Length: 264
Image 1 (tube, rainbow, N blue to C red):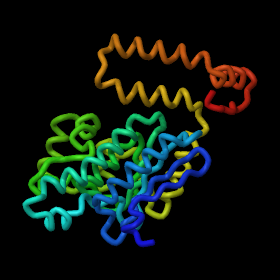
Image 2: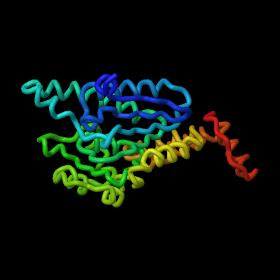
Image 3: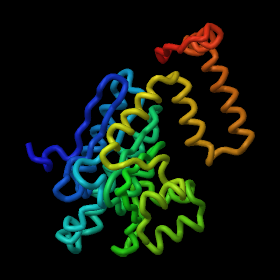
Image 4: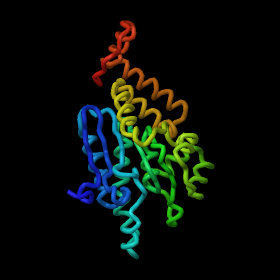
C-alpha cells in the first residue's frame, strides 16, 4: 500500500510501542489521514496490555516538516473547515497520548517545523539526530501554534524565550536545542534509532507503576499548588508501597541483585 493509505504505522514489540509517521515523500507533512492515523494508534495503545514505553518517529529524512500547506491552499475559502478537519483528530490523539501512563520518547531528525516541532517536544523525552533543525514556523504562514506548541514551549524555556522562538521563527539546530533543554540528547543520525531503542529498553525495565505515577506527578505539577503536589506525592507513594514491585525492589536492594518488575 502507498504511504497515503498508511500515513501512520503502529508496531508493538514486547513492552515498547512505536508510532511512525509515514509520508516521507512530503517530509511527513500532516494531512487529515495523518491526524486520523495518530488518533487510531493512540487508541490502540490505550487498549493494549503491557506497553510500558511509546516511541514517536518519522520515516525518511524528516521527523515531520509541519502541516500540509497544499491542503490548506486547495481549501481556499473553506480553510477554517479544513483546519478543524486536520487539527481536531490530531489533538484528540495527543490528548489521549498525554493521558496515557506510559512515557513517550520522540526520536527526531532533519527539519522539524510547525506541528513537527510541537509534536516532537510534546513527548517526555526527545532524542535528536545531529542534523535536526527546529523552527516554530507558524508565524510565517500567518497563524499560531497547534499540537501543544504554545503549551510545551513556555514550560521548557520560560515565557520570554518561548515568545522569541515562536515570534521570530529562527532556526534552532540540534546543539542549540540541547542547550535550551528542548531535547535530552543529540546523537549522530545513524545512531538515532539505536539510541531511542536503548532508552526505551532502559525505561521498560523500571517499575511500571512507579514510572506511571512519576509521569502523572511531573505532568500535573504545573497545575497544582505545593500543598496539592505534596498530598499527591504521599498518596501515590503509599499506593505504590502496596505493590508487588515495591516489595521486589526492597528484596533486590537488600539481596544485592537486579529487580524484576511485573507492573503489579
